Image (tube, rainbow, N blue to C red; front, side, top):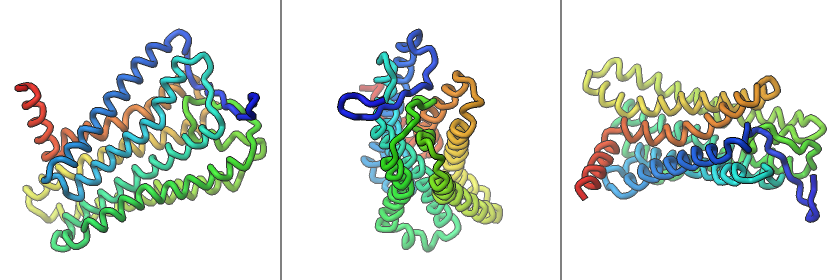
Length: 308
């Protein structure tokens, strides 16, 4: 449906009982968004401020928290507008942009976790070479690649989508996910095949690499002392928990798109909310509680806050 300015709009049809619960939805999601901003910003600020946290492992944790902030900001402000609006619509170009940012940052999460696993692998399996391998220059390159590679992958279907005018103007979701690739009348086999290539390069290969590095780490730890195993577990366990959580949520996202016609609308909404709710909150909680140095600074900060 086009307005006078010839702008194509997409209807977002994934909301349930919005007229009845719009303010409940708004307050709930606004509270979650504030928690996401506060928790992730706290982790980033602590790592930037404290000199003893200027190590590769903590730099990657700060990058993950920053990534969560950007990912949430891509989704939540538009949700707030939709909760309070009579019509839940988004322009086709804005929908493609949201899709691009969402999946670019989602891919970056996998690659940042991969960089972290490589850092732990070098630290535990090649400790003498660690200062040489994990230099600031190499860290900067890894961070740049983690954000650049997914963006270059995801931009291709976006550019192809802009060239074709959609004939379907309804999306069974609350934000623009992979369903945008189904907007065109003619089935785009090339885009579907390319999507599998993106999934392989940005998600499956990184996960396999992480599993390989942790297999190597476990072999080394098996031969090490109990104290070494305990110290390694403190840094490796949070990383594995975040990886498992994010992988499950990505599987949810794929299931939502592939099986959306077989899902009740309420179940569809609940599963979609899990994708945008858990991970941005899960990361700072896990790293804040499980990483000893960050946890120590958090406790010190709250003690000073109470005394003040």
